[in-house]
Length: 64
Image (cartoon, rainbow, N blue to C red; front, side, top):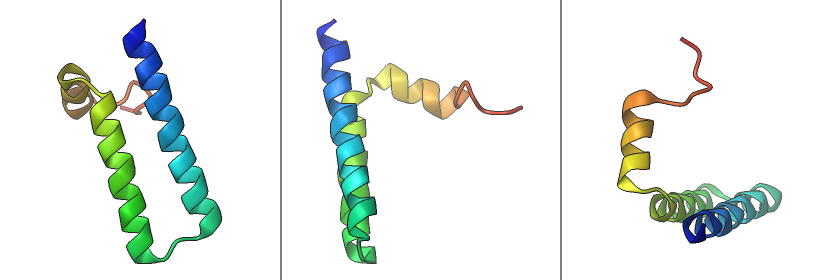
């Protein structure tokens, strides 16, 4: 349960960063910083098993 709460917090932070960057209309350098922050937060939220599943199996919504 604690892990789920931590993931929800991380996803909320990622969404906030993405929303602010869209509203602020960042220049290319700022956009790279934003993407780096999002990547770092997402990497912290995913376990090794989650990352492996995404890399090898793709999204469940992916069309075949």
